[in-house]
Length: 182
Image 1 (cartoon, rainbow, N blue to C red):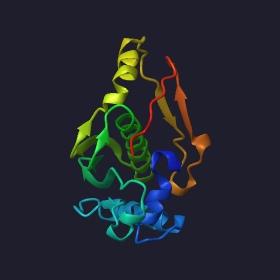
Image 2 (cartoon, rainbow, N blue to C red; image 1 turned 90 degrees about the vertical axis):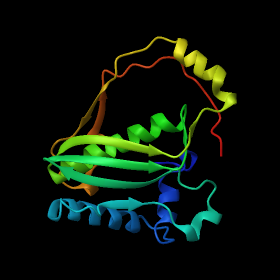
Image 3 (cartoon, one colour; image 1 turned 180 degrees about the vertical axis):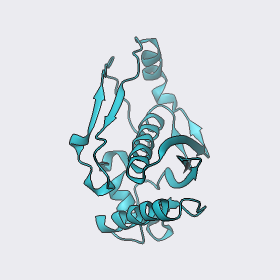
Image 4 (tube, rainbow, N blue to C red; image 1 turned 135 degrees about the vertical axis):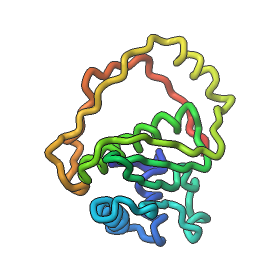
């Protein structure tokens, strides 16, 4: 998964884990998670969190989507994601897809079928300044959803590269621009 500063992603996550700026900390979280899913799938403690109180004052924006809980039930890997806030137009589509891809990756490397994803959102909203762009989007032609192909030969989370993902039959409509609210 590759995030940029503009979408308040990996850089923020790196700083949020025990104040560390190293990718090693992110790797540790996911290495631990994968190990626990493989060896203790009935655990109710399969949790990740990007919320670190010590770093909040230094962040441009606190993590909106800040924690996950992973549950293995009847051979399926389910995901619960918790967010304090979500911009329905810009944030929601990105974050839902981001966590869907992550869930698929984790399910694949732990050998479970894909389960449900549940999102608990404290506040979901639309900004007034986005209403015109949203109207243009809803009036534009709609396309069938593409298929996400993920290389089935990858067995470890750290082995994924950008070349292991393909969107098949992707079509796009208008280019729409809107300012991210921070």
